[in-house]
Image: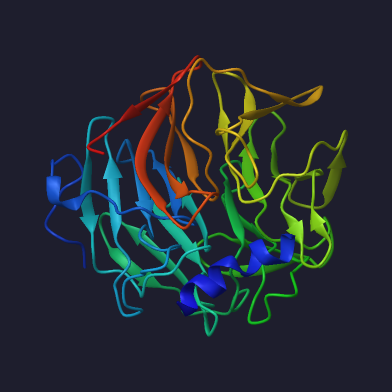
Length: 328
């Protein structure tokens, strides 16, 4: 139950690899329902990677449970690795395409457990813990990879005290962490963060400042400074964001207090709703990423805003409609 208290803190402030190979079907390795997990596209494996599924509900696995990685090839999920560090959610997760490595920093398990280490995973080496200094304990955070500069950018989140949030920005190139900005967008948790190649910037949107409610602002990071982007829009928290090259736009899905998934996209004119002929049920803290090989947005999981149920479903968006796919 303590995990649930920690997981909902942000909400209350607002009112060596396993034997499976990337393409092998494994019906017993379907990801469990979860919220606050991470989903990224691995270009070298040509598949989606899902990490830290299983948390966010009333019956979490034991804290000693190892982090697992599942792979989605467009037809089925398979278990890729089950030898990771202790499971956590609300971590910063990104995929470094130069190093062909999944990068994970921080995360939380319960009110007494906020992690501060950085891990990398690749198909060749498995999990490796970064030995140098970094941002330290941090959860409710976001991280995105800037492929032009070869940096994972981390911004925002909270630490041991859920009533506070960070304003600093960090970058990680696989060799060292650097604190590259002390100020920028207002401090926040439950925001979204993704790289926009059309702007050559990492973009953050929404979230909430503890004690002050939701945010609807947008900021861009060019590697040197944060710049606000007008206009602001209706605040949104507990969502997920990815860049869709077909639409040449950042796309936001999910969040609290929504009817349906309620997709937003960011163009030169600002944020606008994306019409879809069908869509998943409303959910908070899902995870969405773009499958470059197959030209699809892929969404997994999230929490039911009307209760404590967790979704374990997989959806794909083909630019017109969402379609439920996979085993569940």
